[in-house]
Amino acid sequence: MRARDLDGRRLFIIDDLFDKSIVQMLHETFIRLPFTQSDFDTEDTMHVRHWKFDFQLDGFGLNPVLRTWHQRVTATAAELVGVLSLPIRRIYCNSVGYGDHQHMHFDDKDGTTALYFANAQWIEDWQGETVFYDRAEEACQVVAPRPGRLVVFSSECLHRGGVPSRTCPVPRLTVAFKFAPACTAA
Image (tube, rainbow, N blue to C red; front, side, top):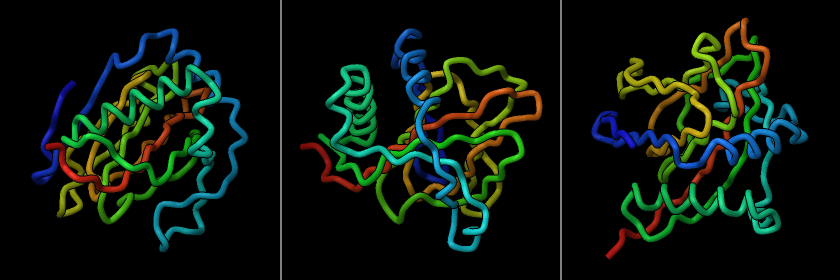
């Protein structure tokens, strides 16, 4: 786990939270989701739609792999933020391919975001890094989409999802966990 500063907010990068076989199983599940072109980054960019799949929050208990993954992501995010638990607002999977376009945006006014990189394989030349910006809208942190990586950050951090390069033959898959604020742990 590494922590980086982002204008006084912490950006946590966690690798090896899941073994490779779990990362592979999750990838095989997520690549088959029925994505719709129904999401956008900001009100001003509504005309640029993204491929996404919204998870039903009560559906993770049915599959033991998804349940364990979901529980570990939520527990890790809560621990890093320093709370006992974080209420979930929304969980969805994004599918971004070469030629797509992503805009800078904030996720929410408050709360926490955990971003899981869901590809089982990623080659550095495929690019697709998530870019984080400071308050002056200067790019200041870049996070590579390594398989199984989890990034936890304040939902008020300005960021942009990365678009894969022309050499990338697969979509870049990420799962965003959007958490509401919670009371700090005692």
